[in-house]
Image (cartoon, rainbow, N blue to C red):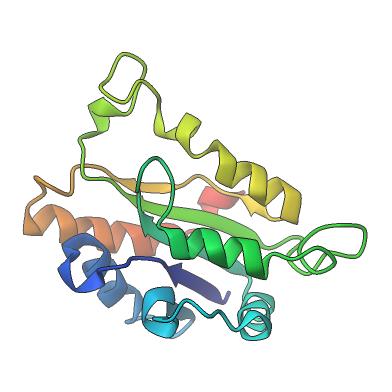
Length: 177
């Protein structure tokens, strides 16, 4: 199985969690790590290249830090420009049908803040619904997300363990049956 991990982090050099995840992912030859902010510092996306990358992989992961209850702006722009009518959706838009989509999300706050009654008032499941709706529209199978909460207080061991668990997760067949 070929996995495409689209990383959207505007300041990856300062992100311990996302950088550690990328390092672990790069140890696996069937994973393509594609860093949007490095590839497109001018934010001019090569739509045909991006569509081709998606077509060449079985499973797609959108990896990003949770910004203002969504993704960083370049991932949203990528969605707007790459997931086009006639390619990703619409009567002839079937290029992503039957592929799998996973979100790999990091948050600064603790898990307890993302629940009813918590500081943010909503669960991550609720806050990630727009991504699930996008998955439905483009015909991908939306798989349970990988969420790392508490990046502000995590220690090195927790981060390393999360990177190994992340890689194990995206390759575990039992999770998806």
